[in-house]
Length: 125
Image 1 (cartoon, rainbow, N blue to C red):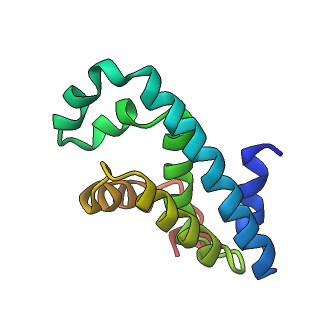
Image 2: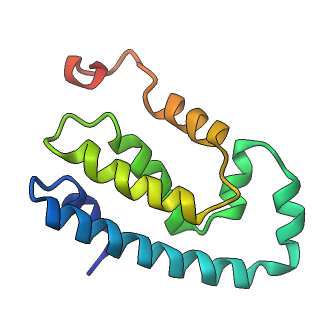
Image 3: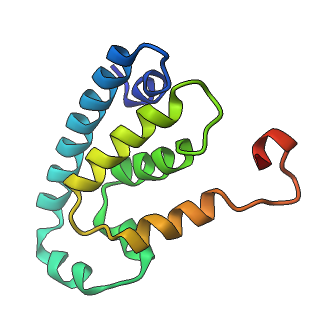
């Protein structure tokens, strides 16, 4: 199954489907990240010294970075049960990625929830 389907299932009204999607997504992301770290182990310590939120683009595999941003964007969702599914998956992802700080998450959350002029009323809520 494509990891994109997991994001849809995270918003399911069915709690079992949400939990299954969260577990499957985290397993897939763990494998992506593990392979990415193995491929980039030569420069890993150098990347970890950086404290800017931009370092996540280097430390995270592209799939993991996409998932991190999408999970954070899903937290304020208005879809039924989406907040529960996305928060569970985000919590598990953050526990897996020890190099991500609370400050990183809050910075990303501020970026994705920033109100812009082109937003619809529902999006602003």
